[in-house]
Length: 415
Image (cartoon, rainbow, N blue to C red; front, side, top):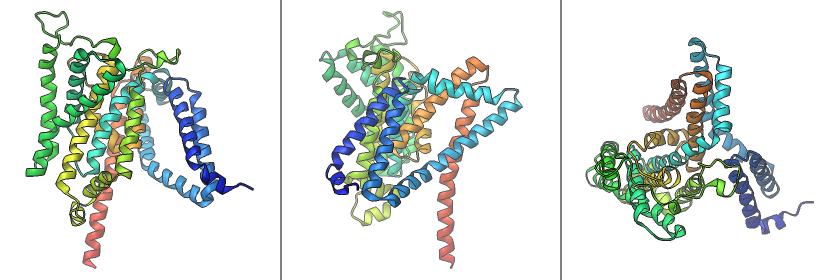
């Protein structure tokens, strides 16, 4: 007979153990030690077994059913997109079986490290967009805040001479604050005048992009003195993010712990939105501003906070790229991470934990698409078509939900 009270007594210890087990497995898996998946599966199995003992069969089935319902629409969208992509390949003379085999092998095995390098900045920008969405806002200018974070990281990396354990956290914080401050004027305009954040943040994104050329010239990219006029001076190696290869010899030499930091930030954002007062107020404002105002919640204050924090998160994406991968700032540093953050946020239904997985999927599609193009001679546009269809189906779900609610309300009024 299982002693339920004993399990309840040591519940916190059990949760910590399962979290460490899952974290260990994830760390190995991320570093291309694919047997780490065994520890992840084991931790999930033990988690549900623990819940089965404590809460019973009905509670476990309810949790699993709820999780499957949330995953159903994105999975259907991905499968439909894969099917349509296969039809297009057949019509254009490609073999979809071998092409998709190369796509998934390249994205999830051969070029797994590239998928993660792509995913890390996407997690930050996806969180930025998702956080703003929770307040009913559309932070379409994450690209600009990303550039500001990258420029701040490059400048600080060049001039701070503190020990690495102090310098790197300070750069993350200060560059994130720079991204937040770059959203100050759009936030103020939104609160004071009602100016739409889509227009203001998009305009500021283009300003940041073009200012980066001026920044590069001022930090080592002067054509009169440099043989590389489009690149800043490199930051010292002591300010680089730790690489997995320094811990696990078989890991790829480019893979750094930025992906781990991004995942931890995603959990932190989830905690803020789910378990704090400010998170509740932001979600209340996003769900129904009038009802939130009636409850005594300041709508303007929470809109301001949401946009500023969204800028902070997007700024961290730039820090990740400068300290982790490029170690300098150069023109066209972005691979569209700010714009693609919108896609991964929508696909994750603006759930911070979901953003982790959709970012990895997006990163894997990009790296797998490159491998597929090299080995199967397919065009990269196939991957873009798949991503576009997935996004279209997800947006269609939002439209269906929105207009469905409108029609239902209208029908009730007519009755």
